[in-house]
Image (cartoon, rainbow, N blue to C red):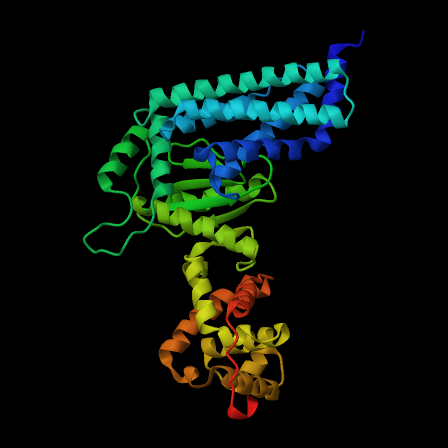
Length: 427
């Protein structure tokens, strides 16, 4: 009679190459069936759900191949997930419903895997027993964390710290009104900070760290507010501490990238967090150079120009339509020349020196630019708006983003063709 542990180990080993695709299908089933989990792909909530499911699946296989070793890391992850759901005032019944869907979807994936890989009945039974034991264990961790979150709320040190971060992340700029103070209201801020034992300094600095694998190790300090997300860690610290903290993060391990805000009053920490996260996004888009430490102060213009992507796209289609209609090569050289001119207003020889081409080349390009834009180039308001759109769009184009050109082409294709003019001679 085969050893059950060795049978389970061999089955888990066979499953490992397919587990990522299996887990993704389980996540998709949960998201499709649960409106409360139906976050957009790539959103923080969707990333967190996918990350937790993949982490649990990988540790399940690790345990099956090398028993017994319940992972404290996964237990802690699911307790924190449960605690977070409670602190966000989500319903436990929704969590249990999602677990039931995940169990059914996991069983369906398991039976499909058993069929395609010719697993024997004992092998399938061993995997199923181990899987459902593991899912029940994860349910217990979620329940423990949920109970802790319900007990603590915002009245404990950790609960108040979590609530502060939730408020900062939820804070969004509203309609400009001089009668309404920006950021989180001071009364809420001071109350939560006192419970959280977080010293309120005159100014704070936000940091966002992008990482792969495990989150970076950070010092235990009451002055730091820390939130770990999939592939990013967010920090709010007193402004005077950020330099030492950035250096410490840089020394901790290679492969980390840190965006640092300029100092702001604590009530505006949510804005500073947005700037840092936007800076990391712009690195991925190729707009900001991929250096290890990004100073948001030096990138303030790009952060501002990319604060509302849909507005940039709209203005690009409105103001740069003649340029978008050019061939890719012509568009590239003309946009580079036009951007240099609107930024500097220099002569052809000076622009040629900046772009390392002959002055006559600039004159040829400028002739074509005048053909495209005509009298608009003598309208100061148009030139100002065009400058901002070029400064935000050209770096995207150079990094390979084709969305503006695809949108222009799709809109052009959708426009009705002009009706032919019929003259008497045509009839």
